[in-house]
Every structure is written in C-alpha cells, then in structure tokens.
Image (cartoon, rainbow, N blue to C red; front, side):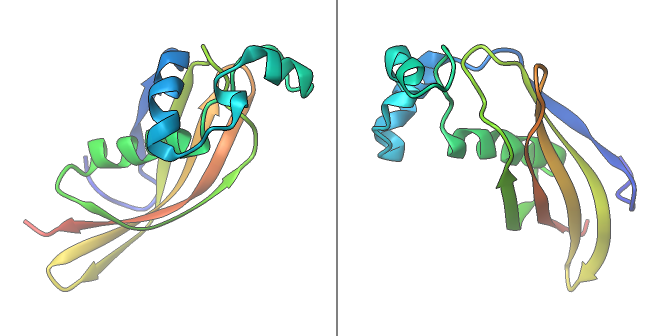
Length: 136
C-alpha cells in the first residue's frame, strides 16, 4: 500500500463481539461495572437487553487495525470520541483514512482519521491517530 493522503486503510472487522471476552477483560481493566456482565442490570438501567462492551476494548479494535496496516509502526498519539455503545454480538469494523504524511528523521508520521462502526448503528467511535513508521 502506498502511504498517501486520502488512502483508505484496509479495514479490520470483528464479526461478533463476545460476552465471554467482556468477562475476561473486566478484571484486567479493573472495570467491575455490571453493564458488561449482567443483562438484568443493563435492562434495569434502560440500556437495552444486551451486554455493553468495555470502551477500552473498542479502542483496541482500532489500534489493531492500525497495527495490522503498519506492523513495524508505533502509535504516537490517538484521540477518540465515544459516540455510541458496542453491544454483545455486534459486528464492528475499524476503518481509517490517511490525512497527513510527514517525514520526521528516520521515520514517516502518518496521520489518520478513524472510525469504529457497528453494522446496526454506524459510527460508535471516531477519532484521529498518528502512527510513526520506520523508513526502509
């Protein structure tokens, strides 16, 4: 892939967000919020009937997409906005468009606008990232 402004990075897709993954990650993230673990709590709070994925996991999907596209790179900065929830069994897809390319010493800094989209609701996270890629 040629890195140039306007280039769309290949997407990273998760076909089904797993409630089992939420259970595994809850103690790692130190996030005991029951909306990730107990459907009855989700219902009682008026948030629907499906478990809600942890925000850091959703951000990790975007990070995975960036690292798959730039395997030798490193994420220098990242900002994001949570627009909607991701629910168990959602299919989500992380996408990005290159918005800037800048040489910085022995690396190229690639700026991107990204989005995580749920099939059922469109954008759930939007943001920007800069990835430093070594020049080869």
